[in-house]
Length: 358
Image 1 (cartoon, rainbow, N blue to C red):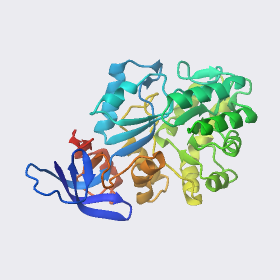
Image 2: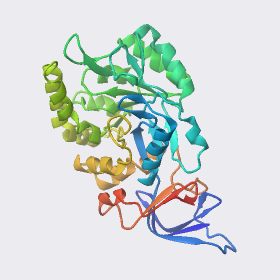
Image 3: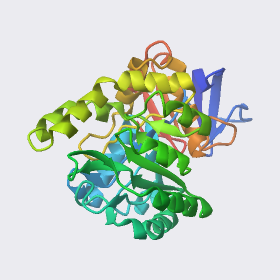
């Protein structure tokens, strides 16, 4: 039995003095007759959420189980106890049987246009097969499907929308019929309006948002996961591809230059925003605290930045936080993360499924 004392941040406007963990679950009622109690003091938050992560993937494609385990453990030790895996070619279902590893909500494998994405990552198909592959991944995933909405088009030398509008409309409708939500990788401007108008639920990165498309996202409640620590790599990517694709390189630099203004404008308009690192490709795992700090740098208030990785993110993904009877997945810090968001990078205790892990 655990007794959490200090300040328990149940929600942005709900702060308690203590909670107990009994049988691996949260309770705010003092247990009667308890004898063996471990007390943990500090500032308690629900387990952090990385809403765009890739377990079982590295820069070259699928990885073995030992590498996947190391990725998951790194996230766990950083306080990330719930992951939305935004596309992976590896079968990581075995993680669900491990009591010491984070909970994962999978989007199946990426679905991309032929030769329009990173090699070894995605199902690479043509538009006539999109509905069938979306249905397949909807059945394999945990309520999400991941499309690659835009990528470098070698025929134009710039980012380009990958799919005919009719194909994505049919595919998204099929996913919804099967009870799955759909998200898409999108860097540029062109792909956003067609995907939102087709009924998509979320956009990853969303660097191409403009004053014309932000109101559309807000009106339809389409969420974004900005992955700002990934967007920080755009200048390096542009430098590497400038000789062959100067138009693309210039475009990537412009998207990077306005990234903070884009995220702040989306927030001000009421677009739902969640924290995601894009770990597992070229980025290391365990960086969710850095991503939340980037959201603050973009201008999100501290409560909104925290919500993007705690209360709000869990609600969006349909998973409980620190509510009566919920599984005890929580993180304890030395001081108030609302006063200094950088505290998130140094968990004092990690409690997963009611057990103190670290």
